[in-house]
Image (tube, rainbow, N blue to C red):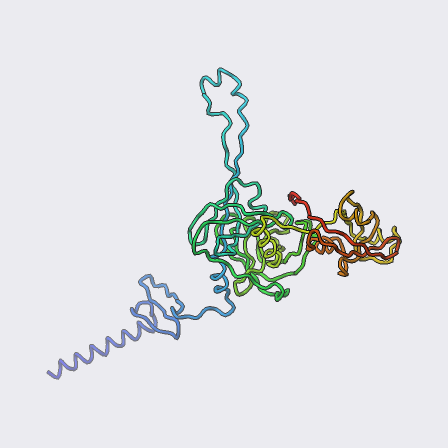
Amino acid sequence: MRRLWLLFAQTITVGLAIWFIVATLKPDWASGMIDRGSQRVRNAPSAIAMQEASATASPIQGSYRDASKRAMPSVVNIFTTQGAKQPQNPFMDDPFFRKFFGDRFDAQEEKQFSLGSGVVVSPQGYILTNNHVIEAADEIEVALADGRKAAAKLVGTDPETDLAVIKVDLKELPAITLGRIEQTRVGDVVLAIGNPFGVGQTVTMGIVSALGRNHLGINTFENFIQTDAAINPGNSGGALVDANGNLLGINTAIYSRSGGSLGIGFAIPVTTVKTVMESIINTGQVIRGWIGVEPQDITPELAESFGLTKKSGTIIAGVLKGGPADKAGMRPGDILVAVEEKPVTDTTDMLNLIAQLKPGSKTKMTLMRKNQESTIDVTIGTRPKIKRTEVE
């Protein structure tokens, strides 16, 4: 009996020694799981040790997942189609050709398909996008992030800011929250959300590179947010949001030599967006003030040739006969320096100041004529609709 116990003890001792050697030199041979803080090592039969993060790990500090989650449902994909006729095949004039091939080469209806983005701004179904996304479209279809699709009708457009409003008849739409551009500063983090190249909804990150960008020749009225967040074809009409997921602007254009993002993108600020959107929804169009002149910036060369002592303002290069400015006595060569005592620095300033005036109202404008300052009263007219031209 004593011999059996001795044999049993020796067997257990040898077994433990073998297990200790294997666990020390060949841990991948041992089965089981070893906890190491918040990580665990699983020993798979393939002998490959892998580390997995804890299922309860907290979000990485500095992540923008919450802002993306909040804003992404409000950004939609826009599909547009435009009918076009294919030219008739020249062989169709040959009776012998028609006898064998019939009429299948007759003019056919062709659908041109394009992609863009839009932003749901109201639970009532109003969606903002760029005018160039839906321009000349015969049909507009919207696809939401939750998978729903619906035909959209055009409410109105404003080619001079490149904005358009469309509407869909769907319930429980995730409307975005409008941000406050006046609190935005250069260097703030922003996210661009859209459908670049038709690959699907995409979020890119960058910062506000500049505010109040103009003189770009993109739109008539310019006051862009510049950002280095990647904006590519298909992002047009999408959202530029802040780090909380609030809308700061509508992505509209990029500076590019290749068609792809070079880190210089432009968005129409939410202040302009809100004004244009409300005007389109309420009246079907955007009504702006107009006086009927052709302005020109004062360059150093012009200032020298005209003998100007004041280099701010805008030169009136032409006056429309019978227009508001002509009736008020404005003449070519005059320099407009102030509108309602607000200084005019250049043509962009002048256009923006006059556009904000109510048609039919009388406005004091300060002129310089032969270095003599004078004031005239101009009855503001309504700015005529101008067809948007393509900008390369």
